[in-house]
Amino acid sequence: MHTTKDQIQEWLKKLERESWQLELLVSAFTIFLLIQAIGAFSDMLEHVQYEYNLNDSLLSFIFVFFAMLGLSIRALSIFLILHLLLRGFWIGTIGLRSVQSNIHFDRLNYSDFFTEKLRKKVTSLDDLVVRLDQICSLMFSFAFLVISIFIAFGMYLLFLGISAVLLGSLTELLTGWMATVAKVVAVVFVFTYLLSGLIYLIDYFSLGFFKKYRVISKIYYPFYRFYSVITLSAISKSIYYYLISKFSKKRIRIVYGIAIGFIILFSLVEFDQYQFYPQGGVELTVNSNNYDNLRKQEDHVDDVSIQSNIISGNFLQLYLRYDPKHNDKIRNNCPDFAPEKEDGLNWSLKIKTNDGGFQITDRNFEDDRSELLSCLSSLYQIKVNDSIYTDLEYFYYTHPTKKQKGILSMINTEGFIMGKNILEVNRQFKDDEGEEQIEKVAFIPFWYQ
Image (tube, rainbow, N blue to C red; front, top):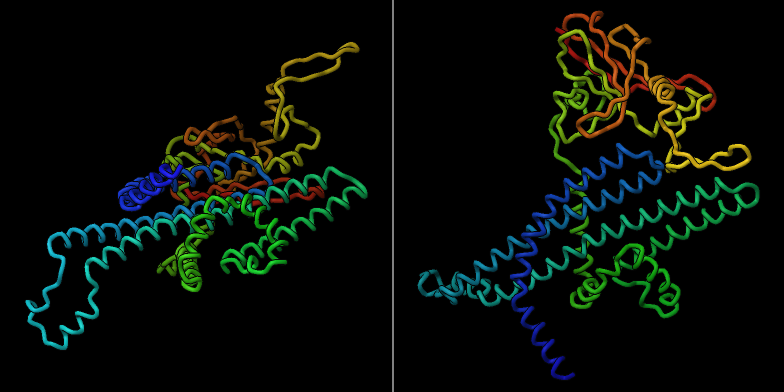
């Protein structure tokens, strides 16, 4: 047993001496992966946004979670690039030391005053090599500690969002006094979760304020264990406690504040000198997303798309993306029609009674295709210049770029004018009170020749 411990200690010392090689390999490889991951996370976020009709509150928390992941990736990339630069400087210092290990001040022929100052201020190569090695190793560990903070915050909000949606759904299912009790439980849970989360945050950044007092620490410990699991911070707690036990807590707080402040500032502030160019808006803007010939192949269609910004020929091809979040509006337009397909999970089999018995058949989702198309197209009002088109024929269409579902129509160009034309697309529907509503969807200029 003693021999095994000695062997482990010797192996760990050898790893410490040669860890810089692993750091360089991991840093370079990780930076390459992170560059790829940024694009992958963006695609995943777009896919969730465009393809699924999730609860708005839950979707907001999911977006925040992915935003925290993206922030973590950027923070880790910055730290690893700095780490690579410092390691390169460290290797250069070692190479220089192999050529010349001491400074020969007498050969410089400086004054006695300046030579004495240099002897005191210039760090020896041996000390510089050791100091750089320590800084690089600490930076490598600190980088993963910082990103664990962003991931922990994202997990905290994601758990809150999922819990709030589940509790909200439960209160909607219950009635009477049970619904009242469920609402009280939901409010108490959310309040307790937010308050205890704030306490956990204060304890983390104060480097253990609530762990110092015996009675308070006993009360705090269950919350500490709970949030260690929920936020996944248990994974990085070894690095956290080793760092705060080695260095001055004041210095660690300063480094924490500078690092997190810089990352947040870098993410929230942008340099922009285009004072006379608007940030958003629909009118007076040519949005490349609205044209198949201008939109990038990797981009989704936001709402509406036509084949080109310059139209020639007899027909304008109009594509309208079907967004499931508008299902309620479509249902209000067709109150007497119930689609065979449910909004959510659908069973492939259907059970129905037949002559006093049960019959299991396949679900036929094709029977109501024409009625579905009529309800879906009723959501849109199409206008070119001053003409409103009420007799357009629509077809189901899956856009080839990102396989987005929608409907397609062809507008005859006979009534267009030579030069600039304006296509307006609005949503028209009845609200829950039966009042007619109009929402602007797209304002698309195009040129007809």
